[in-house]
Amino acid sequence: IIDEKNFTYRIILSVINKYLKGRKRILDIGCGAGTIDFYLANKGHSVMGIDISEIAIRSCNKTVENLGLKNVHFKQIDFPRKIISGKFDFIICSEVIEHLKDDQLALRQIYKLLKQNGILILSTPSINAPLHKLRLTKEFDKKVGHLRRYKFEELKKIIFKSNFEII
Image (cartoon, rainbow, N blue to C red; front, side, top):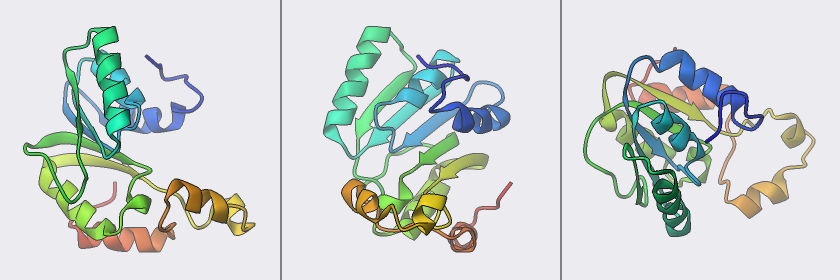
């Protein structure tokens, strides 16, 4: 299980930890290998990770068995076409919406899954990233299934349109 000093996750963990006070019910959309979920479960939170990849979810469930954690669960779900039931205090959607055909639908679904005053942590590739500006990301984006990158103003627009406010 990673800690706050992990090079790859240190920035997102610092943001999550800034807003995550007390024990919470957390949903991680596009959980991948579940790295952040195991970190959060180890802190005592109740965590649900979902991903479109059946292989990723099998791997996560095997890791749950190996770690013996009881407060983290994983499901293979084609979000946002399919959603899970329930409400969450905190939702993480990190590096996911750029893969989805209907990013606006995804944000509307996320809004419905959040409890009142819940928090969404959203990250996505920027059109202003230095390598992208140098035109060095085209093949990478295609290979990993990125449908788009966002300008901050475009991202703000779809966030506000989905009834979120930015903090």
